[in-house]
Image 1 (cartoon, rainbow, N blue to C red):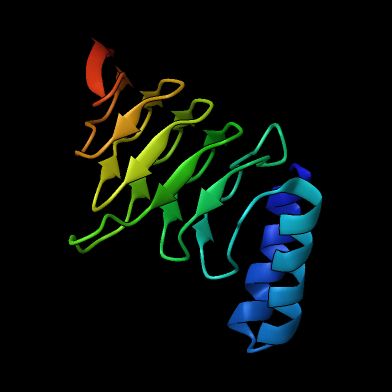
Image 2 (tube, rainbow, N blue to C red):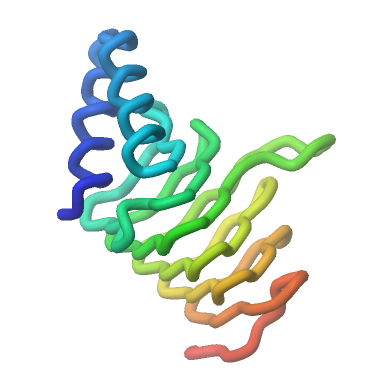
Length: 141
């Protein structure tokens, strides 16, 4: 487990046990040390890693990330103006550097989001998406 996942696990536990002030202090520490915004309310599945300590990543508190995912640096996940819903990331997903996943979007299991991709629509299981807007490059079905 990497540092961000470990810190977030503690932060999330504190939040769930109504120790919000301490959880927010940890969130502030992550922002200062790693230039990342990883809210305590966010759900991160077991085995998910941030190889570059989530450097430059920004996540909305309602984002859900599945198990065994790999999130590289500079990733943004959050809402979309005028739309309801937030990203849900499946299990075993890899999200490349500086990808943006915006709005009520589901990323399917075992998928890869390429570096710099902008995802505004659902991504099925077992595919590779790239580009702006993200389009399926390869399917591993």
